[in-house]
Image (cartoon, rainbow, N blue to C red):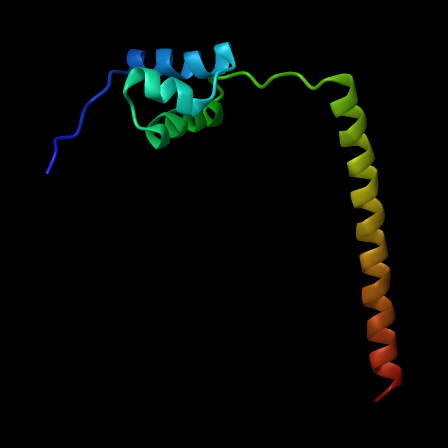
Length: 95
């Protein structure tokens, strides 16, 4: 069995910064640092979860798509609610 390597918080933060600031893929950075890809991915996810990595602002097209999808979701939820009521009404009528 191998021994577990320990990494300092500073090392982890620098590795996460390499991924987030450079735009390089996690696999590429992990390979260059000699760290397992999943380990680095976990560090990045944890940093994002803790708010240590700011989210990139949405572009204009991404904002437009988000707004469109939100409207579409609201419409689908209303349609679904209506269909549930209609199905319940038909089930009641056919007893």
